[in-house]
Image (tube, rainbow, N blue to C red; front, side, top):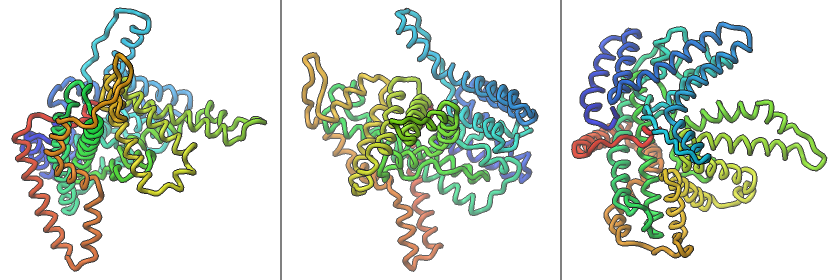
Amino acid sequence: MVFSSLTFLMFFLPLVMGLYFLRSNIRWRNGILLVSSLLFYGWSDPVWILAMLFSTFLNYVCALRIAKTKHSFIKRWYLFISMAGSLGLLFYFKYSAFTLNGLSALFGSDFRMDTPVLPIGISFYTFQVLSYTLDVYWEKTPVQKKPLRLLLYVSCFPQLIAGPIVRYDDIEQRLSKRYTSPDDFQAGMRRFVVGLSKKVLLANIAGAALNETVLAGSGTQLSFAGAWLSAFLYALQIYFDFSAYSDMAIGIGRVLGFEYKENFDYPYISRSAGEFWRRWHISLGTWFREYLMYPLMRSRIFRKMSMKKSPNRSKMYYRNKATIICTMIVWMCTGLWHGASLNFVVWGLYYGLMMVLEKFVFDKILAKTPGVIKWFFTMIVALVSFVIFYYTDFSHVSQHLLAMVGLRAGEGGFGVVRLIDDKTVEVFKTYAVFMVIACACCLPVGKWIRDLLGKTTVTDRTANGIGTLILSGLLVMSILFLVGQSFNPFIYFRF
């Protein structure tokens, strides 16, 4: 089931809300939320629930044992069991075929493994439950003794399938006591409608425009303008698609009494790759920083590397070397988190390289560069990254990137692509107004309007009335669009 479906909007959500607010008792509300979350997750294939149950209860037992024992060796052993079980499950579904088929090809074997059907959202809930066990191990959070509450934390349907990745510490108290005020309910529903509008009126239309470009074919006939236009349309689609889900998750969470942290902060106004990733998929970046980057830097091998001394090298050299290696490892893992494919590995290493170059090579130059120029180059970096991210066939990645610099590869060497093609002109004319509106929606326009209204004589009541009227119109338009659209899941469901 998806948020942007009539089944969810017309039946599931109203029914769950009605039952949830029928009683204020926390046991009742947790029970309704848990049952509805499992129903939501298992709607298309109930067998996927088993994998989530296994991962959750394995970590529940291991965290209990970690909290009870005082022996560091036993603590590490239980932590290893929890990580091996959860990551082993993730590896089987997501990476086993990729790894075994790659090894088979390397050694010239005919063995081929079919890729298992990937349970939706497995990467998200695996990281959530592992963060809980790690926090218990590091004594950052108390252990949860009630297994159903831990299962509710993992399976809570607003953020289950595509994030944001919620840390247990952020909602631990809300699992036992929470309250929804009228303001929370109103603000949550407003946020949900904003997300729904993003998905239906922006992401889906950007995807339709993308499908009308020559990219929908083999991609080999891309012109220079077509290559950039298709990359631009995909950038719009994936941003509005993913941020829409986060908006809806945060909105429903607030209605239910949870406060999920922001997952996007207008990334397309960034002036560096580092800033872009502080604004894009914030929960994932935070997870890798706190649960992989920092532990790596504190590990014995990198601690020794950063403290190494040499008559020919400064101490800062070895510290920077350790940071660079850790950065590349973390970004390679970030790429692999998105999928078992060469393009995701390259995508991760590409961003890791951008981070290293910005911090250690071009830092002084960037400090003196005008903001608009830094923004322009950051957008180019982002568009190139989306091309790498889009294709699972790396030959298509190279063809598209070559077209973006005006070249194509052929049997006789490199040639020059056309500047523009008829299909690109047609798509541009058809969607020009939409692209202008979409670009405006990538900016913090709402904040600017609120700041402007704050300087005028418009009352809060009038402003709220105008906002309610606009959101009501967007809700009606979204529902009308959904009636005529086929099933269109969120892009990040496949991760």
